[in-house]
Image (cartoon, rainbow, N blue to C red; front, side, top):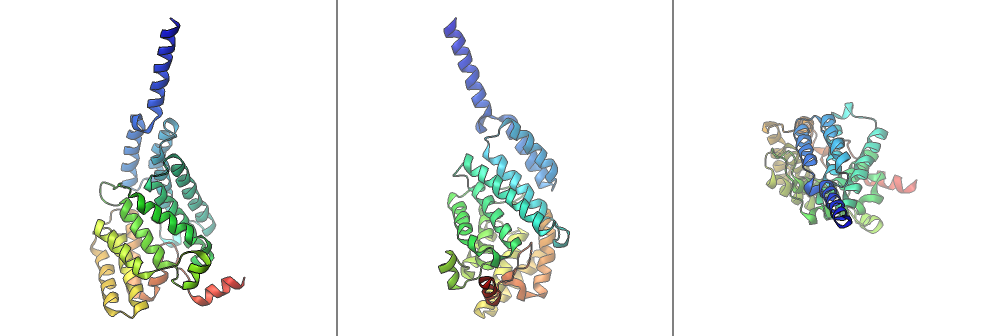
Length: 295
């Protein structure tokens, strides 16, 4: 009888382990599916509710954490600049994105989606504080995004409004454009901008999702910046072409509406290109950099 009791207890324990494991938690997978559908509809609160229920059953499922991080990010990105939370509130929210990504990484160190969202959280904290106030973090940020790229996550949403590798290329393209390319930054902080790499990464993003508004806008911005830095009129003309293309592309998510508006602004004000960021225009002049060093 004792042996049978031990066998039964063992089987019950094994069943509980399998139920709590990501691969066997069917109810959690169903909630992820529901959450994805709600996210695609821009219903971030409802999407979060599905994820919270899944977390109660499957707290060790890494995917749940990067999806919660994405909902925080997209909730902000879908708003026009003038309607977004205050700078301090945004920083706290982006710190939550980083914390969720860190939980994701702790559970699955080789999950590229986790690293991607850690990079996005750090990057948005940086652009919210101001690039010149965040230069001490650029080396870590570059490493996080390159780590995400090396892991080659395969996630793509049904309509292409999210593409893990495309989003990583897009983030790297923005990083190499908005961070100044001064050689001294490499010496002082371990990384620097590189407009050639920015254009290269944005072309890779567009190649993955040719109809993504954000990718086309960001490639246009990088080409405008490249053309201004290199005195290359062909690059400027090509950049304008991509920005003009944005108006004819289908809206796939709420932030696309913001990007369409920003594309029009950039066509009228191309000098904004090098310091452009969706959340806040960046000051990246050497004069301002010297002021930050004097403080």
